[in-house]
Amino acid sequence: MKINTVLGPMDTKDMGVTLMHEHIATVDWNFARAFAGFYDREETVRLFCEEMEKLKPYGVKTFVDATAITLGRDITLLRECMERSGINIIACTGLYWQEWPNYEYGADPRFLADMLIQEIEHGMEGTDSK
Image 1 (spheres, helix red, strand yellow):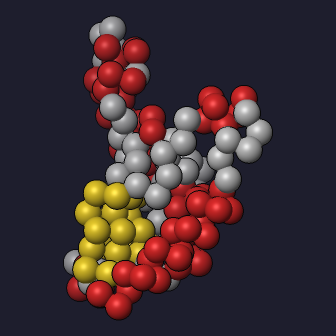
Image 2 (cartoon, helix red, strand yellow; image 1 turned 120 degrees about the horizontal axis):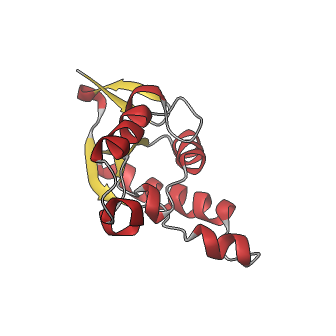
């Protein structure tokens, strides 16, 4: 069976020990835009790679990043972390319902479903990562 990582499909038998609900970075993009230096992308990648090296001897091969869209999910960051660390990264789609005001005020749920299905079938944030 295959599962999508941020760099493409992998066989589930190659997942190894899997961390199931993790976050590489949760970033408030409003703060990041407003305040230079609020978020250090390179330091985030470096720290992730450093921590994953400590876990590899224990068989950790896969990291499920549960950072939803509204928590600042950044697919290009996840792709870079996977490339540099050698750890498989599986990303999520979705958001917290209370953080999307239109949903709260009666938007057609099919509208939201169509957006999320688009990510699953075609890729996230303009990439081919599914």
